[in-house]
Image 1: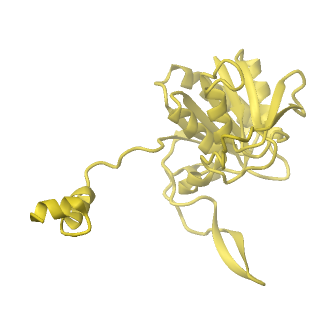
Image 2: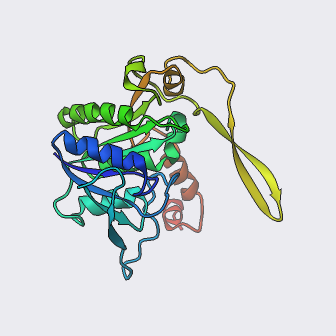
Image 3: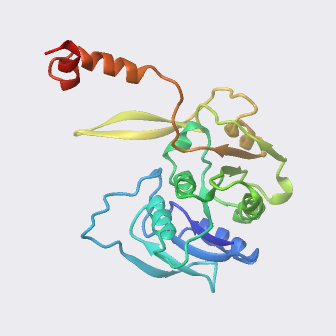
Length: 267
């Protein structure tokens, strides 16, 4: 497969190098392109793309992955996926693998993750995507996340197109992994955001540990127990039946400022 490897932490991240090296070793043809700067929390944003301004990119040497060519791009990971699928880096990729993020992307906060956003953008452009995260720490076992990511990539190749998988791996040696489970999204991750007043017209966002006991089948709870949490996710889709359209039409029909309402009233 021709695989785009990207991330949201920046092209100099050791997690990107570990992931790219593992995917390349498994025999895939790589496009490695990632933001020049840290774009964490960018979700599926593509930024303010103006038609009269180019998108800068440059070749970058990946630390820890000699021989693998990489590009640093002036933009978030979802934009990089868009560019790649439109042929901006040569033949378009057939699969996107995003990560390895230092810090788990679990719970509903995955909505804000640039790592996950890249995988969801892949699905929006007709191919499958994998988002890979591991636990943060003074020592990170990148090789564990990379090994499991390669196995997940193999599975995705045979899965229906536009399948998206969010993979959260414990930050432990591979031999200490306690298993793999299909996981639901927790109501939140391992930490929650809080706002404090920093004075002088500024607000400060702080991340605080939570003490709430989560359902044991959620991604946050599983990975905390040393288990790999695997969560298939979907992106934008219609929610189904709703009476909102009928309500709006009825309200507008009674509004004399709307031509449809005037015609309906015989005016």
